[in-house]
Length: 143
Figure 1: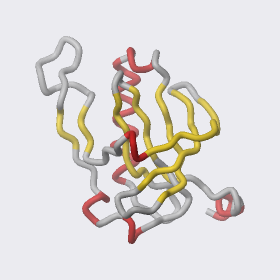
Figure 2: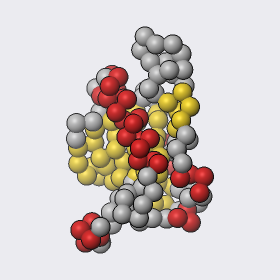
Figure 3: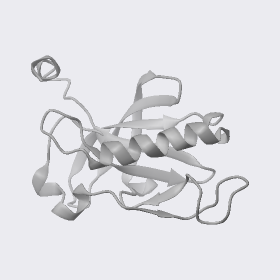
């Protein structure tokens, strides 16, 4: 989930680091060595509402959403949902996991913040991050 505003008070310091633990094997590899890893930045599907489509790319579709953060506030976010056919490609899954890992560890006022990832059966994945406010589009140009 991505948002255009930094909500430092909303997220305790322990959320600023990304830690992965392996939970499923890579195809043809030993258990625990697969690219699909459990994230500490998991967001429950029930805490996320998907709204209109903002755009799409080779990996999936980006939609505006609303996330009910642990603080109790509702945060306007962008949600990147992987296309179903992408999930069958191991290299695409690796790329997605690398992107999530890299973005979750970034912390700078001029960068969007990755809040977390939603993993729901059957392997629907969505990254949830900051979104720029429509009321203040000049913020994108000033950064």
